[in-house]
Amino acid sequence: MRKIEIFDTTLRDGEQSPGVNLTIDEKIEIALQLERLGVTRMEVGFAAASPGEIRAIQEVAKRVKNTTVVSLSRSLEGDIDKSWEALKNAENACVHVFLATSPIHRQHKLQMTKEQVVEQAVAAVTYAKKYFSEIQFSCEDAARTEIDFLSEVVAAVVKAGAKVINLPDTVGYMTPVEYGNIFRQLRERVPGIENVKLSSHCHDDLGMAVANSLAAIEGGATQVECTVNGIGERAGNAALEEVALALDTRKGIYQAKTDIKLDEIARTSKLVSRLTGMFVPGNKAIVGANAFAHESGIHQDGVLKEITTYEIIRPETVGFKSNKLVMGKHSGRHAFKDKLEELGYRLEREQVNEAFVRFKDLCDRKKEVTDDDIVALLDSKILEMPEAFVLESLQLAYGNLSVPTASVRIALANGEMVEEAAVGNGSVDSIYKAIDRVTEEEVTLDDYKIVSVTHGKDALGEVYVRLSQNGISVQGRDVSTDVLEASAKAYIQAINKIIARRRDSSNAVEPLPLTSTMN
Ligand SMILES: CC(=O)SCCNC(=O)CCNC(=O)[C@H](O)C(C)(C)COP(=O)(O)OP(=O)(O)OC[C@H]1O[C@@H](n2cnc3c(N)ncnc32)[C@H](O)[C@@H]1OP(=O)(O)O
Ligand SMILES: CC(C)C(=O)C(=O)O
Image 1 (cartoon, helix red, strand yellow):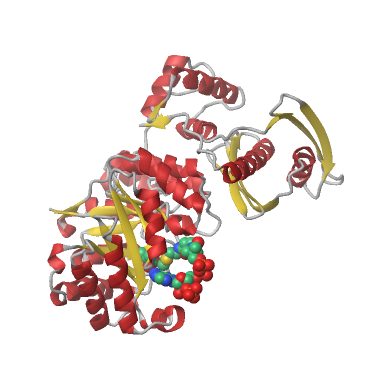
Image 2 (tube, rainbow, N blue to C red):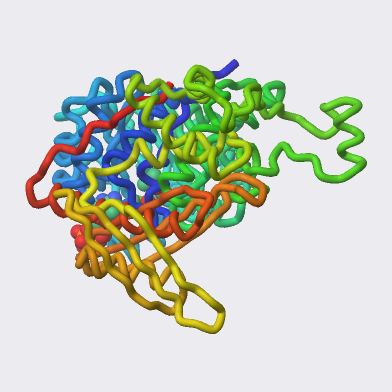
């Protein structure tokens, strides 16, 4: 079996999904889960993008021990210096240098000749050797590059010292046969290519990112770049979970395996979805809510008789757990702790006690508390920031013929209570106006999303908001059986984050340590 290395770029290309902007703590949380998942490399960001990005990479690099941490850099000395600043204390570091090679990019974007592209690529790899022993080079838009020129660039950067060559289908234009052939041709044409790793990076503009990644493996790639849930620029990247499961389920075809711990997939997917606000569609392969649901009579009859009639993967394989203990109002602390461990949380005693109080509070509002409810409760608690404002109470007067009016009572950090009321165009609008009066923060609401996390009349609703203020953009989220309460708390959480970010950037304060780790 060939070994295929998974290069995860959820925290870099995934974060390029419009509207996604992860805090340092959120990047750390995802990075630790990616390490548990078993990815070989994780690209945590683009160091030259901002000082905050450098700090995020540094903080991840401090904590991640068994996975190579990667920073992306243009073929510029300044970018490579910043990647080094971000990665110099990493246990295992890699710089990912890129330069576009296709005629469209050379002519219109870079305005460079072929000779200049080769020269700059070689200069960048040579410069990166000053700091890094592991250098990956990407020919951006490799898929639309003339094969002769692509071979020339690859030969030059391999000679200069690049250890991994990535050949992105930057705009998702390839068909599987075409993309696989690029790898075959380079293996035939470039001297010394057998000494480096070949890597794929596919975008999903035509819905072929996973098929193309698998074709690259057949063509000789031994590394696949991908993201959890397939998030990323435009239509996204190849979905990690789909690549991993295709290789596992069809081993006979691909004769290849990865180090991915398949039973960590469901949890990784949920975590990424929650922290990025990028919801997973119900019909999404492997991790969608319907991926293992059998709806119609003939199918149900089939699976009752023999599960393999309609199921090629068992949900447990990817970490969807069957409920063994029914959790509810009558559950005690032992059962709750046991459930937390089953769900993979390792919390201190005090944190278990605190979570238990929240769990009981939820039990008073919900007949049966599911695993998803518990994960949602914990994730929203774990990621809380220092709180400048805490919602104490919320009241709403609403009727279809009257103007909605909200009153809020909010605790300030010094313990003082402030009450305000406001009218608005709708319930949420009135709540947000009342909160604004208390916080006196001028923020713009860029996005508001609401989803049902669990099922039934008493399901939990999860609310995401994205707020911005003077170039700072943050997300807030909260989960409750009451969506208006969740809306208010998500909004206040985002305001608290803005305040923390503002303080963070003016004082360059160290990011808060996480209060817990998950298995
Ligand atoms: C295919 C991909 O996903 S590539 C990764 C995309 N990710 C990002 O862009 C990360 C976020 N980006 C940023 O924060 C900013 O773009 C920065 C800080 C990197 C650069 O900002 P600015 O200096 O203002 O430049 P801007 O983004 O407007 O333009 C890009 C410049 O880099 C040049 N460039 C693009 N790619 C490369 C490269 N690989 N190597 C060298 N130069 C490059 C462009 O030609 C352009 O140069 P010009 O200013 O001489 O015309
Ligand atoms: C920088 C490279 C790897 C990239 O993201 C792309 O080409 O899509």
